[in-house]
Length: 248
Ligand SMILES: [Zn+2]
Image 1 (spheres, protein in one colour):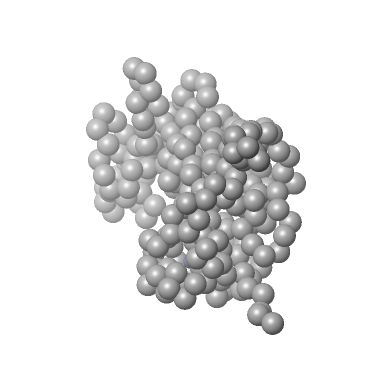
Image 2: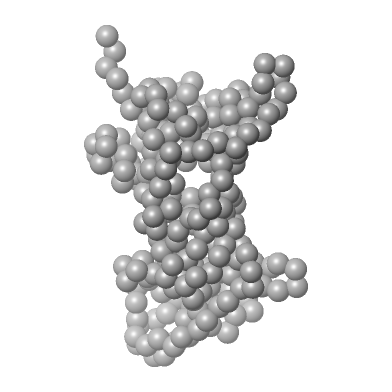
């Protein structure tokens, strides 16, 4: 009898030639604490701050936003931690360990995290849009002194600098698409539904952080008013859409 494994065969992961189900998850993100998502060492044009918050053009103005890639990175590391806790340290690896990702693919045992978020060998089953402020955007500034290694670009001993941040309580759009992972499933032959439900519960509980200064509690985000739509094909091959309630 084969040993039950949390690793996934290629056929479960390289499955974009099939359409089983697509879930659209929407709601509002709230940054519960001050948040700053920077540009790393890249200079951002048009900002007077030394440590600016990342912005995007919306209509005629530049507004702060939360890049989908930042959310995806934070979600992936949470899923790695949970996977390691449930299935053991061997079930995870650093996201940029391309050798391991390749070996997993060739050995037909892909780890649950890559099975959700993808790797150099398999496409991601989740897509997360940039989150934009739902109302008017607020960026505040404060003057800092000294050096913190979170601040790319500020030299030691450079003296006072201006840091931008988004004050707590801003409401942001949230849009995440999950393809071909049965989110409501309680079956044990695929670890991904449970991991994704755990991720969403953690997000609702405000246990995920994005951006800089995480060690002092910045960038705590929480998800409110989540709504899940499921798109499937019916027996006639027509696309049907229904709201589903996830146990979170
Ligand atoms: Zn992997």
